[in-house]
Image 1 (cartoon, rainbow, N blue to C red):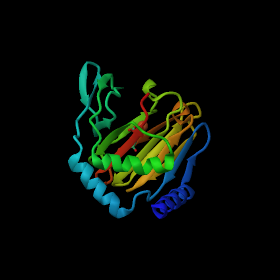
Image 2 (cartoon, rainbow, N blue to C red):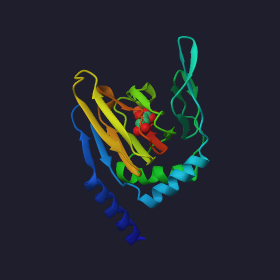
Image 3 (spheres, protein in one colour):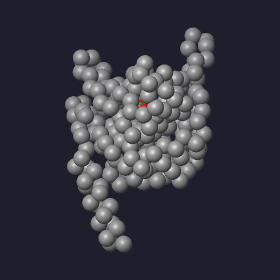
Image 4 (cartoon, protein in one colour):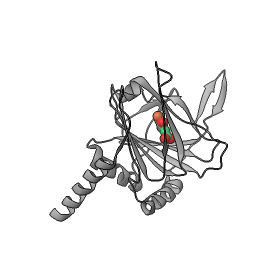
Length: 210
Ligand SMILES: O=C(O)CCC(=O)C(=O)O
Ligand SMILES: [Fe+2]
């Protein structure tokens, strides 16, 4: 037992050392590549792809209902509602694959997440436009743990006021990106669509809903 705990601690510290600081002005973003091994990531991608209840959400624009360019799902603790695209949503209960991922990132982040928003980018035509994760339910300086499986996609950050300040990284199979501090207050992020052929990608953003 003791030995196992030591192993966990070593692993957590090692991962911490391997984190790359992507952004440190007006917020903090850290990337841990290969947070999950390739083998674990393959297994988790397949499991989530088939076990998650993916849904096609729409947004209302000029009186029209427009499908979002990705499939989504929301899981979490019971009773934590979340308003997304103007619709009050209730999470589906945790499933083992999600609890496993959540536990693993909590070892490093040292907070307890109570919900996760999942996105499935089926191909290069799927993406996510500029936004901040600044919904009031998330509180002032939310910590967001973003896990990626499947095809690598570009991830961009731009400062809200100093528009020239742009940061770009790639989110690959098995990576963990942490966004903390004032990041959501000062920065927007997006996953651009691409004309290149890309493998499907699953992204999970773990959040704390107050
Ligand atoms: O797919 C990603 O990496 C980003 C997802 C995201 O920004 C979100 O769900 O709020
Ligand atoms: Fe986001």
